Image (cartoon, rainbow, N blue to C red; front, side, top):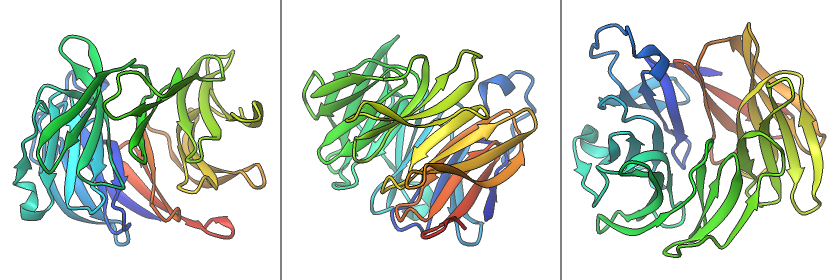
Length: 319
């Protein structure tokens, strides 16, 4: 296991398609902004690039406050996009990120999440807010640097965005919906099957839905539902659950658990319907996101100011 240490809390993490680079974004969490120490060069919010094999930081560039809430790498790893309350920022990796790509309407779009089309790297999609409170799904053409599609959507908590060919899948704690680029209404929409959901993750095959929901004791639990059979296939209620993420081929679901004393990264092995624990660390107030490498053999999980790079054995589960 490799640890990538940061000076601030990690809000986003992403793998390059080839698995040779990990990008991360750091920011000051809202609960820590009041009474924070003076900003220094080392403590400024920034974008970082790492070598996941050695744990060495390749480069970093600073960002303005409130700008690092989401992150995406282009399929060819040549560009990096970050977004937050200050708008969308896209830069070339070459020239140490000094060259920014100016996109139509990007500065006024307060970004919640980003997704680059893995099949056509000219298109970048984002979900965010325009104006006072107007949530939209927007798509930019990176070759022409223009906004090609913008449609109003419902905005809920725990929202995620993923390309499915030329369409976009929007997942939140309330529903899952698929949009066709340029169409105002979704192609289909389904409500989350578990009551009081906190976050939802849909498998790549669109059959299994993993949901973190609030139980009667108000603690978050995990359930996996087969949408075609309409049945519960897995439930975890031993400890409070945080982030969740499906592996690229839906073999495993990674999730984090938190207690008063510790934090752990676990896997659900769907072939055996059992939980495997990968590692445990000291609990911290800010649990971060999970990202799978494209080959499904490594996981990057952010926990406070550290990103853990954890290998997963193809035959035995966790290495």
